[in-house]
Image (cartoon, rainbow, N blue to C red; front, side, top):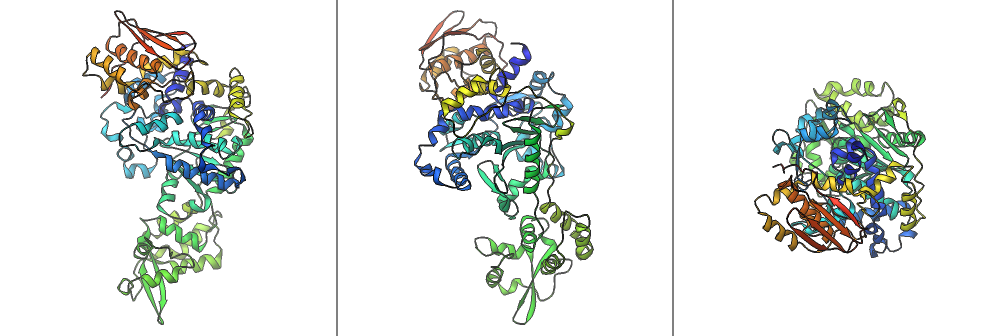
Length: 578
C-alpha cells in the first residue's frame, strides 16, 4: 500500500485523538470493531440483562447505562499511552491537514475554544500544562478489550476509558445489547469531547458514562452543567453515522444528507425548551455566577420576606425539596429566620416577579422580541441583569455549531453497512468483511479490531514500532538482558479473547500481560528503539512467534492461531519522549 494508506491504516490501529481527528472515518471503524467483539456480545448473558427483551426501549438503555457505570471509570490520565511531540505529529499529517487549521481545532495543538475555555485555562483544566514546550500526550482511544484491561493496572478496580472510548463503547452496546438501530445513533466529536446523540423520543445524549435526557439537560444540576459544557462552548468537529461522516474542516463528506438533516433537526429540538417558571428556576440553579442577581420573595405571617438566591439554593443541598416546584413551601420551612431579609435586596431581580411575568406574557425566547421584552422589564434591577437575561436565553435556546453539510462535496461511492439488530455476531462479521472493498469504514474496522488474520501486518507493525513510547521509556535504564527477562516475566495471556487479534506493545506493557506473539513484538519494539541499525524480524506460525535479531533468537509460544507470516521490525522507532 502507498504511504498515505499505510499512515491511515496504522492510525486505525492506534486510534489516538489526533489520528481520529485527521481521519474521521476511524471513529465509526472503532464502533464496528466493538460490535464485532465477543466481549460485548457476552454481556447479553450477564444476569444484569435478564429479561431485557421484555423491557421498553428506554428502560433497556437505562439498564445498559447502569452496567457501564458499574464496570467503567472515566479515565483522563494523559500519561497512560506516553508522549510524543508536536513536530512529530505535524510531520506525520502535513499532507493531510493544514497546521493552522489543526491549531484551531485540536486541544493538543493550542486549541482554547471560546471565552469560557480561556477563562478556565483549558490546558490546565485537562492537565496539558504540565507538558513543556513541544511535548504532548498521545491520548489514545481504547477498544472495549483495552478498556476492560485497565483492571490489571494498579488502583483501577474495574475498566476505564476516555471520552471517545466511552462514546464508541456506548454506540456498539446500544446496538448489540439495547437493540437500538444504528440509523438512530450519531457520534459527535468536539475538539475536547466526544458524545453520542440517540434519536429516541425527545433524544438522549451519552456523556462519558452517563445518559442525559432532554428533561435532564434543562434541570440545572451540576451533572447537566457538565454535560452541557461541550455543546455550549465548542463547535462540533465531526459527526459520524452508519451512512458516513462529516468533518468541519474537510471539503468532502460521506454522510447521507437525509440522515444528517434528521440528526440536525432532532438535536436542535433537544437543545431548546419553552421558558416556564420551572425552567427559570433551573437556570438560576445552573448559573452559579449569576445567582447574585436574583432573590426570592416569601410571604409569611402576613409580611413579605426576601432571601438571596444563593442562600436559598444552599438549602436544597441534601434535601429533596426545590424552590422552583410544588415543594417550595416545604423548602422555605427549612430556612432559618435570620437568613430572610425584611426589605428587598438592592440591585437584585425578584424571581417571583419574573415568574409572574413569564406566566402572564408567555415569553417566547425563539421570537425576535423575547429577549428584548425580558430586558426591558428587568435589566434595570442589577448591573449584571442584562447578562443574566442573555444567559437565560442561551440556557433555553442553544444553537449547536454543526458542520455545514450544504457546503460539502458529497461522496456516493460507499456501500451501505446494512447491519440490523436481528443479526447475530457471526452474520455481522461476515457482512462487514464482505463490504471491505466497497466501504472504507468496514475495511478500517478490521485494523481497529487488530485482526492480523484479516489484515496486512504492515500497519500494525508500523504502529507498534513508532507509537510505543511507554515501554521504551519504562525500560530505558535496563540493559538488554534485563529487558528480555522482564518481557519473559509478563503474564502469558492476551487482553484479546478472539483468535488473530493482538494487543499493541504499550498495551502489553501497561497491563503486564501478553500472548507470545504480543511479547515477541514488545521485545522487538524495545530493541528496535535501542538498536535502530539492527535488522529484526519475527516469524509467526499458528502456535509460535520467533524473534530473530542480528545475534540472537527468541522463541515464544502462541495461542493466537495466526496464519504464517513474517514481520519486519526494522523501521526506525523514535526515541521515547519524557
